[in-house]
Amino acid sequence: MLATTKKILFSLLPAPELEKFRPLMAAARSALAMSLPLVLSQAAQTSVMFIDSMLMGRLGPQALAGGALALTSYYFCIVLAFGMTAACGNLVALAHGADDRRGVVAATRACLLLCLVASLVIGIALWNAEPVMIWLGQPRDTAHSAAGFLHFLVWSMPFNLMFLTLRNFASGIGRPGPVPFITLLALLFAPGCGWLLSQGIGSWHGMGLDGIALSSALTFSLIGLVFALVVSRADGFADYRLFAGFGRRDASALGTLLKQGLPSAGTMGLEGAMFTCSAYLMGAQGAAALAAHQGMLQLLNASFIVPLGLSYGVSMCVGQAAGAGEFEKVKLLARVGLLAVAAWTLMTTLALLLAPEALIGLFLPDDVAGADAARQAALLLAPIAAALCLVDGLQVVLSGVLRALKDATSTMVIYSLGCTLVGIPLAWFLSRHGLGPRGVWVGMLAGLVSVSLLMLLRVRYMNARLTAGRWRG
Image (cartoon, rainbow, N blue to C red; front, top):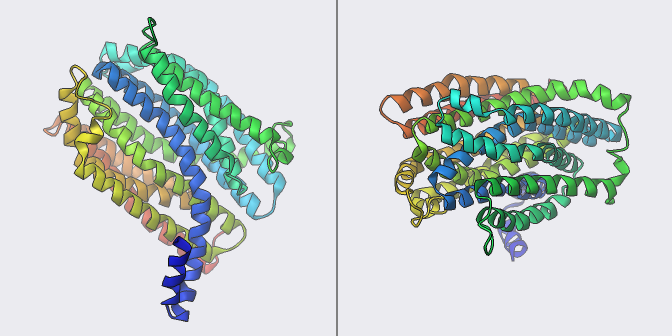
């Protein structure tokens, strides 16, 4: 049906106009084919947190507040390390586009080693996070619940980062096929395991919040181990022998990866820091405000699945095109990514504006005691969250394009200006001078609007360099 419709539409266009559309359609096909598995992969990661938040809501606002603090802290650390895995994916795509098979292996092995080291450092920090949470103004009960949650979750960190690295490796070589299968496995495993361990069965009443944490740790570990098994044995992957050893070429790739990865980690860390600070600012407003923040943030994350997956897919395609010297295709791919994200986020924005109560009810149901205050606070955040959906989607695609063109340093500078000089200070000021919880979200929105505008200017500048032949890969 879709193919027939496309033929009819194209038959109505004059031949010159049709020729203008062909390159754009070709770019759209390659970007969407690459992005779909990555969207599904991101759905698995986000769905685990989404399911966790729903189960926490069944335990009450206090459990949701403690779990929110833990997940926010964990996710912030994942985002920091994820900058390295994203840079790895771009280096793999560039090497694959240039037909440098050994460069693909070296970049991936270097990233696996760095992720192992990062897991150890992050794990120690999160294990001892409770005093820091209390020092930052969080209620002792909330901080204690969050610390207990993290004590389960930290064990999944190396497997989670291994999954992200292997996902970017598979996408960088144009073979993201295993990702949907592993995603489906996570989506089948997480809800049942989380419900059983938190709610119990029969005479066993479950582990409550600790059960949700254990379920998440098991899910993240499972997807990492399964992907490693696939890469080790499946056709199209086993020949790369990623786990065969670590040689001199792999060691030399560490420097290149750090050169690209540290700015990427800084970029993502700056945005993550803004969202993490927002959680702590909301926690200072009380458990109801933090519970409302977590529920609304999960709705935002659910919408963000598609833009983030599109960002990865477009970034990989841009890297492959740039590595092959196809600079006109780079510009077309950036345009396709922005149009696709705009279409998606307009739909999710309308959903948040038209049906906020139904969506908030997923995390704060009517039959849970003490949820009324949190639900009312969440309703006040809904219009701001709707605008945030659109802006956040656009900026992540622009960031992916710049990262693929090895321009990660400029994105870090832009995020530094937008998040640390606009977003965080404004969120702090407005939350303490009249707007309360809404002020936190207004500050985040202002930070991301400034990031998007600056990013758009930078992408236009890079396009001009490509056209003039002044870009060096």
